[in-house]
Length: 285
Image: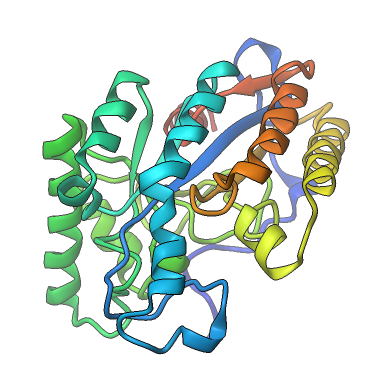
């Protein structure tokens, strides 16, 4: 079947986007704050034990994120005055409440990212998915005092009904469709797609491609330089996707520090959140 969620729109044929203050590139950090069930396989650094339950090697590696990595990343983001756009599994509210407290103190933006990163809604009926999404959204709202406006599915998963069900719950954008450098409207009333990235993503770069720390810095710089060059007439979005159990490792952290130093001091960059990007685009486009 053809994709009916959005229409084809070449970036060369759109009305110009103008970011606040004359900025040319809207930059945000997508910080994945996730919970994993101990008896299900998930993202792994060593495939040899990934099917075991429990799997101390891989589960423990992932669990480094909320125990250690997130706090290292929070310090780095604070140093550069970057507010995170948090892709939040709602189970974190119960299991890691200190992270919610820390994020509230920093005025992080909160997006719904499913219940946890072990359960996907792919096989749910429409009523099951509606109940699932409602629980996720309302759990985050109770914990943060804000109803999430954005969604990214665990492993960027959706059903064909997800955007419509999210719109029913009052959300107005998704990050799952990583096919653009600008926001655009979906064929669901009130719903936008905001750019996310599976390429400029610590999981992909460090784990799938074996990228070194210095190469990570170079890639971030190259991404920004290219988007800035292309944005003379119409703004672009640059997403940097991070996972505390990956970039939060001690030997990688300084490279994030170096990359952000370049970004925050680059001319024409709007340091922002996905909420602010979606709101500005919806109001002006």
